[in-house]
Length: 327
Image: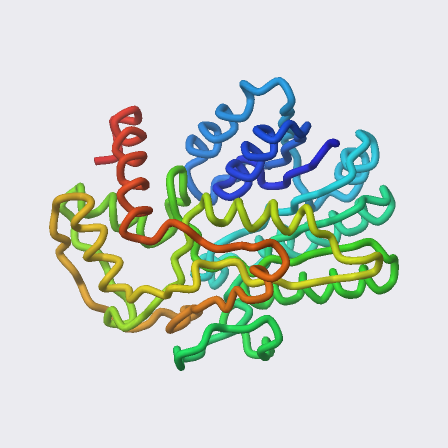
């Protein structure tokens, strides 16, 4: 079977593609290697995949409908894992049209290609940000909770993608599954994420900016657990015409200050902290109820932050040493 993974040079995409290759699948990766963050890291991820005979990388823009139609329709593709998107809540405030093109036009382009190619299953990335800003009340966010008050353009585009997929599943009958990711971290992660930026600043002896006065919490989810969930969903398509949404998180939210303390221990250094108010577009907390995903696939995260952050730090130290310019 040939599987297309969009965003294959991205953080989650590379790890998903690698696991598929380990399972014996042929994988076609798609990425445009944009400069939202260091393209050198994207090339490093792509190099990890390029050594595998069953992998081929296509450098292309997912928002180009003809390119995606030719790719998905011309290589016997039966499954698509669509992870390419313009990420970042804060970046969307200053660069809104990047989100219109990549997240909206790009998602529509993939939908059109998949429905004309008659793919068996499309799994795509959504986000926990669709739930808006809500306090932790002792219960996780459920897939049937309201998603009508996004606080960022990024969140609005992700919810829009879910609605586009619902309409295509209804109109054209091909199965789709959307995954609401909760704060994914780990080796080869994204430099725009807080844990990554904090690591670099702490090791350079620079202060870190702690927004929300530190009174925030996130459902940090280790990359290996995320890949388990993605592939579990991929192997359980809905019935024809079905469209399902799943939370995919750790289901153990951690306070921001606790995350910083865990990172300090892993680095062996204490951070100088500048406490700042919430930034526009941020949410106070995230917390995944994973009951639905567990019932479908047996999904049960295994790696908590105390184990996962040191794994990231070990990788970062090696990558930083190879670059020789980041500290």
